[in-house]
Structures are given as C-alpha cells and as structure tokens.
Length: 202
Image 1 (cartoon, rainbow, N blue to C red):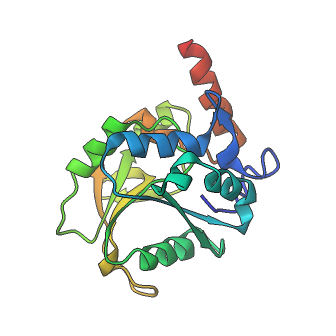
Image 2: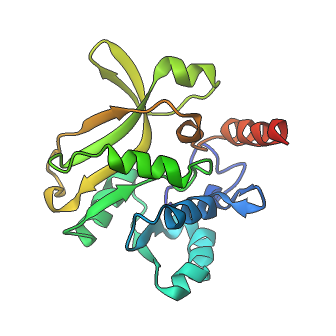
Image 3: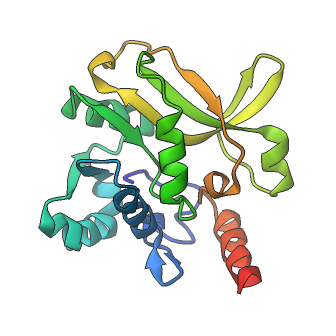
C-alpha cells in the first residue's frame, strides 16, 4: 500500500484512503483478512508516498492489538518494495494482496489459499481478459498464457524463503474470474465504477 499512485494522484494523493462504504479502501482489506481466520499476522508494506495510510494503520485497533504491523519500504517501485517486504518475512508463506481491492471477501481469500500448491514458490491469481473487458475495467498487467490473454489480479502467494533480490522466481498461475477480484482501484474511472456498483446495489 505504499505506491506512488501516479494514475490517480491528481484525484487523490493517497488512494488507499479513498472512502467506500464509509471506510477507507485499505480497511476493507484488513477486515477481510482478519475475518478469513487464515493468518497469524497482517503486514502492511507502505512508503513515505503514503503518509496518510501509515498514520491510519498505526492508529488502527489491530495495530495496537498486535495483529497488524507496518513495514516501511522505499517506495521506489512495486517490485522493489515487494521483494524487500518478502525478505523481511523470511521464512514464511506470504499472501500478497493490493490495498485497493475493497470487494474482496473472506470466502474468496480462503478459496485462493485452498487452491495453492505448497510446492510452488509463487502462485498468482489471474482473470481472463474477456471477463475483465465486460466489466469495463482495464488492469495494468496483461499476460499471455498459452492461447489466452489474462490480467494479473495483484493477488499472489509466495514462499518467501525462495525469493531473493535479483533472482527470477518461476510464477505459476490460477485463473479465478470473480468481479470482487477485478475491482482494483488504480484510476479515477475505477473508483467511480466501484461507487456506481455500490449505488446500483442499494
């Protein structure tokens, strides 16, 4: 949750603090992780680019209670911050999720974890391009997997003992077409679509 947020910073300088259902985006993630009952601890990796987020996290009840911990990163880029965080959490099995995916539920989290193969050093969740296009969304990471085009959800599971800076980790993929995974807020349009979805549901 410590990215620069270049595509949305003119709209909101700290996107994880955007409100959805009367809570910041990041709080929806934290609460779903807790309710899934799958984790011993929740680590939030954040940089100086996200001062409001860090302040929110350090005043969170889960932080005061010891369940939530903040890892402060450089904020250089996503890959650098991810590897840095994984190295600090070695050895561990680490579930990585973006801080701006507010529709995620405990059941989806458990479903992803149950599909993980512990022999794989890295497993990432992807969605079919056709599925994403129908939702009028445009995620950033497009992958060619065989004869299919897929978008990376941003959700991954890592065996941190097998991840090192400067070394390539073979990534394995699981396809899960669920709109709760698809709504990853990267742009103002994404956020407005999310709000529109909420209004239609009311």
